[in-house]
Image (cartoon, rainbow, N blue to C red; front, side, top):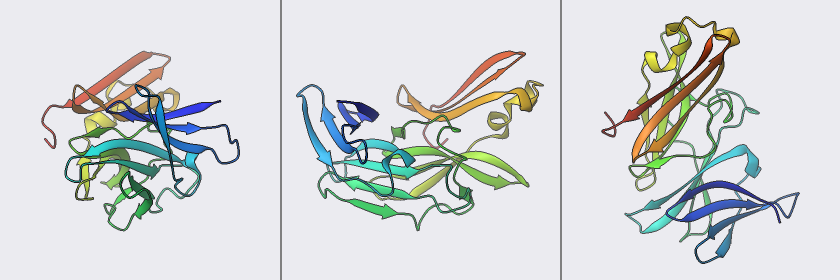
Length: 209
């Protein structure tokens, strides 16, 4: 059998069982007990989503968020977001309350994200915001208790490192994303060029500040 891991939280793993090559099966797996349950599939195809798994203390329930960050769609189209709670056992589309002026990134591979970091009761991913006629990256958050979106702007210094380092942006291979380190939300960026490499990591010590 072949499996593809998506994300993990609190000792639980969200994985894709690829034994069915056509559709695949979405599983929630507990490696300590070796037990798993099959979850319903979101639509459209599974590989177009980035997933996150977290625990909602308000409802005492584990929830899974699926965000379509695929580059196969229009950059300015609405971002497709679906949520599944284990108690309900079904996916529900959430999209009408997405922050205005924030668009999808150019693809989940471009933003370096394989999963949705969960911290402070919310999932996080990279978006694109228009500011001063330029496009800047920003962090989009989604609180799983009240299902409210939020936006965390990134500073110009965090988004435009090649110019600060006097590196030609045309020869730079960039990788950026958000993650969690020591319970803190982080934004990271890596730049590889003929002049050398650099890795930057910003940690938000106080959430929201």
